[in-house]
Amino acid sequence: MEYRLELRNVSKSFGEVRALENINFQLGQNEIVGLLGDNGAGKSTLIKIITGYYQPTTGEIYFNDRKVDRLSVPKARELGVETVYQERALAEMQTLWRNIFLGRELCNSMGFLDIQRMRDETHRLMTQSMGFTSHAISPDSRVGKYSGGEKQGVAIVRALFFDAEIIVLDEPTMGLSLKESAKLVNFVRSIKQAGKSAIFIDHNIFHVYNVADRVVVIDRGRVAGEFLTKNIGVSELMEKMVRVAETGNLD
Amino acid sequence: MNSQTNETAPEVSQHYKVAFSLRRLVRTNSAQLGILGVFVSLWIIFIASAPNTFLSPQIYSAFMSSIPFFAIMAIPLTIVVVAKEMDLSFPSIMAMGMVAFSFTYDGTAFIGNTTIRVFLAIIAALLAGSIIGWINGIIIVKFGIPSLVVTIGTQFFWRGAVLVLTSGTNFPIEYIKDTIFYPILVGKIGGYFPMQMVWLVVITIIGWVMLNRHRFGAHIYLIGDNINSAELMGVNTGRTRIQAFMLVGLISAFAGVLYSFYVAYFWPSLGSGYLLNTLASVFLGGTSVFGGIGTILGTFLGAFIIGAIEAATVAIGLTGFWTQLIYGFIIVLSVIMHTYLRKRGE
Image 1: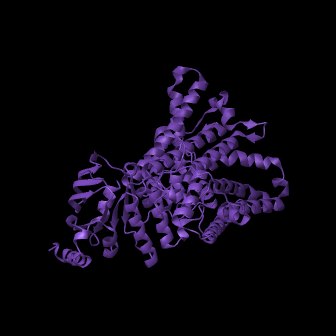
Image 2: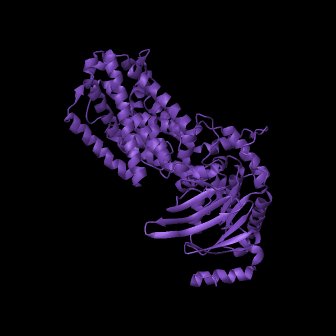
Image 3: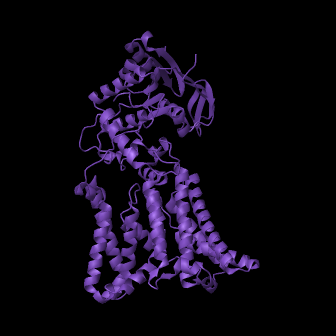
C-alpha cells in the first residue's frame, strides 16, 4: 500500500540530547492519525521534521513512496504539507492579509507583491471560511488584537488556502474555548471527508480519540505503540497512556 | 470553516474595496502623520523665529546638499531596524568604500582615461561596501551574534583598516572634477538643486518600493515582527537579513563616494560624524527598535528634521551649544509620541 507519508528509522539529536530515536511512522491516504504523548515526548520535534523545519539526524522520509532528501519548509509545502503550529506562527503586528500569505506572498516573477489580490483573497476567506463577521476584522486589521479563537482561525484557514494534502495540527485546541474546540474537532472531521490526510496532536485524549482513525503513542522519543481507534476503548487508551508515562511500557 | 478553499488562489471577480474613511487613513498612517506634524510644526517655528533665513531659497539649497549624505544611509538602515537588527558599522563602510575607490584609481593608471578609471573606482567602492555588509550579515546570521555587538566590532575593524591602509593620511581627489561623474553625483541643476538630493529621492523611492511592494520587504516586516513564525512558515530569514546588511553596505559606500566627490577630498575619518544623525533619523521617523514597524517616509522626514535643527538653532540666534540640547529634546519627544500613537493604533 502506498503511504501518503512515511518516516523510516528517523532519529533527531540536539547536541547530546536524543529527542527522537528510530521513529517509524506512517500516514495513510485519507487517514487521520492522532499523535499522543506526554510533554517532552518528542511530538513537536516529530512534527517539525515532517514540516521540514528540522532535518533528521539520521533516517529517511518518503512522500507517496518516494524518498525525499533535504526536506525544507518550502519543499514540504510543495509536497502538500500544511501546518497549524502550536505557537500559531503569526506575526501579530502585521495585517491579516500579510499573515494569511506569510512566507508565500502572491507576487510576479520579479518578486513584486500582488497586494490587491492578497487582500481580495483574504476578504473572501474571512467571510466564507473563517466566518468572521466582526467589524474589527478586515484584511487590513492587525492580528495581534484578535481573540485566541480568531488567531487559531487565521492559522487554520491559512493552512487550507493552499493546496494541502497533509494537514498537521499541533495542539490546535490550546487556549481555545469549549465551543471553539468543538468547532475545531468538526473541522478535523471535514479534512477526512475532503479526502485529505491529517496528523492531529492534542493533549486532550478525547479530542484525538474522537476524530483519529489511528493513534500513535510517543514516549521518550520512541514510538511506544499504536492502536486503531475502532479496536480500543477510550478508557483503555487512557490507562495505557498513564502507564507509559509512569513506566515507559504500555502493558 | 469549510473545505471548499483548497484550490490555490482562484481568481476572484469581486475586488475587496473599502470606502474611503479619513479616520482609518489617520489610524493606519498615524506614525507617518505624527512625524509629518512634528516636521511642519518645527518648520513653522523656524520660519516664525528666523524669517530671513527660512524664507530664503538659499537655506533649502544648503539643506538639500548636506542632508542627503546621511539621509540616504538612513533608508537601508530603516530596513535593517524593521527586521529587528542594528548596524553601527556604516560610517566605517563609507570610508572603506573610498579606500577601495582610491586603491582602484591608483591601480588602474595604465588605462590612462580618467573617466574610465573613476568609473571602475566607483564600482570598486560599491562592491567593497556590499562585501562588508555581506560579512556583517554572515557573522550575525551564521554565528547568531546580536547585530548590535557584531557591528560595534566591525565598525572598529573597518575604521582601523582604513587607517592602516592609508597610513592615516588624507589626500585630495581633484581629478574627479574632470569626469562626467562629478556633475552626475554632486552637481547642481540650474545652479540651485543639488544632485545628491536627486539621489536621495531615487534611493528613497527604491527603498519604499522594496519595503512595501516587494517580497523582500514583506519578509523584512515578518522577521522583525516574529522571526520564529517567519521561519516556521518557510521564510529564509538568514538570507533576507544578510541582504538587508548588504544594502546598508552598498548605500553607505555610495554615500562615502557622494561626500568625497562633494568636497573632492578624502579623510580617513570620513563618516564618523554621521553615526548618530543617521540613527536618530530612523528612530525619529517612527521605526521601532523592537522591529516589525517602520516607514521609509518617516525616516526621510526624520532626516530633514535632524538636518535642519543645527542650521535653525544658529539662525534663530542661539549659539551652536544649543544644537544638541534641542536635538535631544525633539528626539525624545518624538519617540514618546510614536509610542503613544502605536498604543492607540492597536
